[in-house]
Length: 209
Image (cartoon, rainbow, N blue to C red; front, top):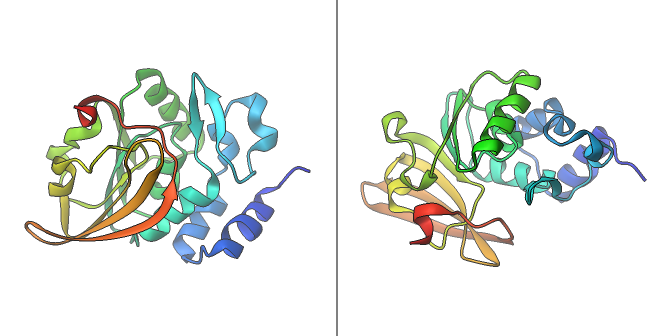
């Protein structure tokens, strides 16, 4: 049975603990169907990852909403995202915060994300193609950093690009990862919280060295 957008919000998000009004508003506003191939659109509101081609997927709605909620975002925030993918996660963040800077290592995927963001009318996301390990130093510091690809350990350059009081959320490890939330409390001081067990694609490039 097909799931519509309202059912996605009510049964997949609210009933599972998503309560942040900014996150729910963004999830209602951004149409997930715009970020997937036409042949997959009948499944757009199901709570599962979907194949978008060449081995790439769009994350399940609950995980996108959960990650946004855990970052405790505010409307004036500036965010760094590592792993643009199809652009859906960036679009959700962009409907909550002032601006999103997003890095994608796969060239065709970054181009696909840009096209999807344009279709969705999102104007406050800046993307570039490259290795996200070093972050985006000339736009730092950020109020929050969100990784949608899993490094073996959290890259030090990304930790240094969070404002004091800011947060970083990342799936960490290899095959099966722990979602970790870092809060920067001082120049070299961080509080780490371990959240869900998750499964994300590995972060490639320098993170694997």
